[in-house]
Image 1 (cartoon, rainbow, N blue to C red):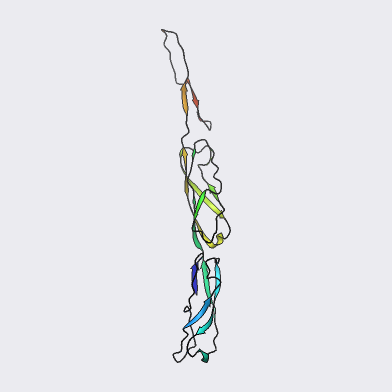
Image 2 (spheres, helix red, strand yellow):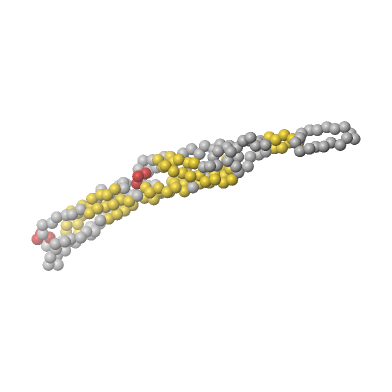
Length: 193
């Protein structure tokens, strides 16, 4: 029996077999081995390995039967990483479903979309860094992969805020109490004050 990882081509050779029933020092020197699972494009599954065409001296003295072996194609590792993003406080960020990278794909396979989520996507998320998680990858032939997800980072940056002192006037000789509320603020969001 043999095994390989999806995406690998397996050379079966001609000596990966056992022979039972030989006597008098006779030997099988080679056989022809074949399997539909040997190609790099063979999907995750179990495949028969067939043997034919045994070669060796004195094999004319034997009635030869061939038993099948099993080739197991195992899933390939695939890592999906959410891309790093940034936004300004007060903005809502739509993460979409395509802001990721995929490492480990073979045979022209593709991840068409993933589900992306972050606590920092909402407009009310305060200035900080937040994880971006990915899950639920979609795409043809992803059953041939063992998928792991790596997190990205969403950075919420400060928003510009302009505070302008209000114009005032007074009469010469009088004292003016400026107080603490004679201004306008431009740029506030989320009901901040």
